[in-house]
Image (cartoon, rainbow, N blue to C red):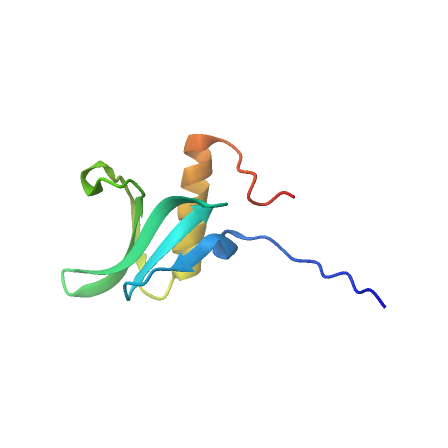
Amino acid sequence: MVTDVVQHWSPMSQLQSSPEPGVWYVFDKSRRVAIIRYVEVRGRRLLRSVTFDRDPAQRQLIGYFPEDAMRLAVEFTWWEYIKCTGPSTSNRR
């Protein structure tokens, strides 16, 4: 008996935790495109998303998000990436 499994793609499926606590990477296939991490701003813990570049000085701020809004941070980060680079093939076979 063969069972087909339907896997639904979402930007969250492109998120991977890093070895560093409180830090995640957003990928387009195997290409790292953004970094999301917990930061403290004026006493508030937030998620900050930046573009990925090996040189930290070259990273661009994408945005700040409430600490409990990882899905929002990832989806916004993904759509900003797509807006700048064009359609991705991560969600296609």
